[in-house]
Image 1 (cartoon, rainbow, N blue to C red):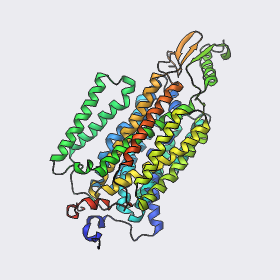
Image 2: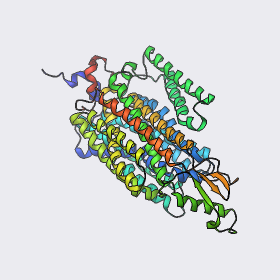
Image 3: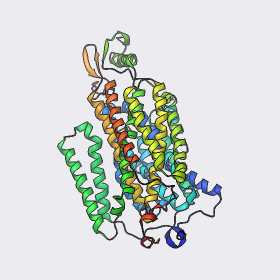
Image 4: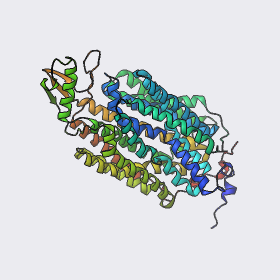
Length: 554
């Protein structure tokens, strides 16, 4: 039986500016520039997240609230991503990439120049819109790149060309370990990186011609962004304020009400932000379900592993405490004469600097993740995305279980991290490919945005889980007969109000929760019906939709 002509069926997709007649050099140059630009968000993760303890010491008294530097990023990014994805369909994908780049640049400048915790968080909020960069890039790749290269290109966008996976980790350590340089060097590097990639994107990458003939529904946008934002606010900070806190329960209730109202509204308006039938279809909803639980695993491991490895061991903690205590006596008492007792097991602590953490632990798994992402993208075009995703979720579940049983020593963390890297690459390469196949072109941006929401909420939940178990198992010190938390004291009062070091049992419980999330993601992937045939680069939705319903470009 002869297949229907794609040209006849999809007039709108034939006028996107696709580079079908371009040379391979031109095509891969465009891919490389888009990938490099889309790496701004993962680059800040690999550079900034491992520096949590260092940044915390620069803001004394913050203690476990340092998690807010990660929470605010996911909170704002999660709320903004679906709207920015929709705007990219309406006003141009390259245009929106440039807009999020400018916002990221502003945020990086704020973080690099402030010593105020509140302003620092505002800067992180400006940076957060960069989470949408990959979401928008998926649509740009779908519109511009010849279909045979789309699955591979999406895999590359998801896991990068090594700038964040390898370079970011090593740079983070090198910059912060250099004598006289503080965490601010990280943000100055991000400023420079953005100043280079923004003009490259403008000069090298053409704008897609595809536009959706639709106006953005402001009420729908408000309900969606507000609903996601308030839900994230509860999930992200529940560990700090208490899950039963009345105010935060109110935020959760308001978020749920707004999201329900959004779904009701989208069923009634003539030009919905997203087709609700598509959102709740198995090909989309199951991917979002798996992504949520997989992102919990990512959030937990990305937060917990660097924190553990940078925590000093028993002897190192005593020595550091003695030095801090002796400084109050201005040399009248030698540090080793001050008695210190550690209450709590910190046998997992390695006391790594960021460079040591990068070299001994993180760079190996991150390198594997980069290769795994490209390979999983390529495999998606040959055997379908489900099988690589299944391997990835198995890696997530297994590594979390191993960490729960044994998380001591740099070699253990590095070897298990390599297996986790296989899962990381396959997860971030296959889920966007699955949604590209499931979504018609006029729904590409918002559908990918909903994947961003699932990832952001999952990451926030994972970070909240880790922070909750940490807060429940603080390490305490008996210093000269006085019991205090182990952490950075407030320079004004000399009191450590929040613990900055946590017991071994905290991390055991964190990784048990991580393993449960990984197992749920694995089971969901096993029963997934989509992704069992090779990815086509954006034509998979035709099997469940009539061509006549296609929206024409402007």
